[in-house]
Image (cartoon, rainbow, N blue to C red; front, side, top):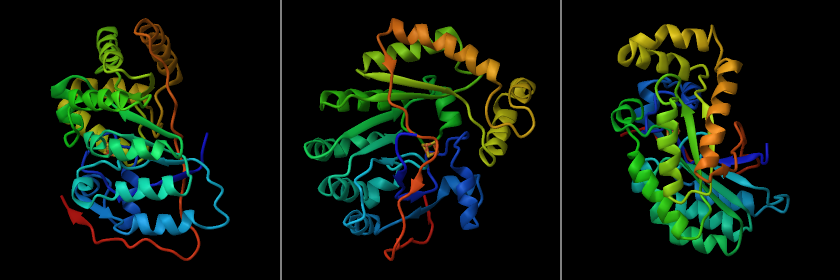
Amino acid sequence: MPFDWTVNPYRGCTHACAYCFARQTHTYLDLDAGRDFDSQIVVKTNVADVLALELGRDSWSHEHVALGTNTDPYQRAEGRYRLMPGIIEALASSQTPFSILTKGTLLRRDLPLLQRARERVDVSLAMSIAVFDDELQRSIEPGTPSAQGRLQTVRAATEAGFRVTVFLMPVLPHLTDSVAALDDALRQIAEAGAAGVVHGALHLRPGAKQWFLQWLSREHPELVSSYAALYPGAAATARRDYRRWLARRVAPLARSHGLTRGEERPARARPLTGGTPTLTLQQPTLF
Ligand code: SF4
């Protein structure tokens, strides 16, 4: 993994993706990994102040910090709490390079700030767009901006001078993995100006798996047995032969649209904590 540190200003996420791998983390708060994760959002209201203190320590070695590796920093609550500008300022003023991965079009609000931050530190941006069929997207990611809205954000960030990576993740077996669907998605990603693309098959960690399979039984019962074969027992990853098949399918399509392999985020990162400063957790807020 290229870096160890991450900041998550929110716990829970109103984007409410049925497949979200962060769901299980909500159970650490005695909330459930299903509807509570989607609606009971914990807001770290003093995150920027604590971050500035921690980044100001003599021991801080200015390693890369990743945002968006657990929950989405530009989810709906960010419009109200505006935590990201303070985080960006704290990182840039401490000479700490950072990256942001999001599904949120609210990223556009902070592009001028990110441009100024980039004059001081390396800043990389990535947009997650997994589902290009509007009906399927509203069903499986009901709180997210549309794929078109996210593509427009990729375009805006590109025009602001960033090399944006698109995460075509998760690819959903039998739902978004046809040649036609992948080709259409990659074409739109390239037309939006993305510099690279990273793809990955659906990953079903505990917490996410139960919630996703409920969604699948309700919306696509005809696929339940196929998914049981692809993700047998407690398996979180799709069978290796499927993942290899998918990689062979995506690679030539991505090349044909001039997309290189983008910069990947780590699957796990160490939370930025330690020492005396502590984050004030606001009571869960119902969105
Ligand atoms: S946007 Fe990301 S963090 Fe939010 S629910 Fe979807 S997958 Fe989870």
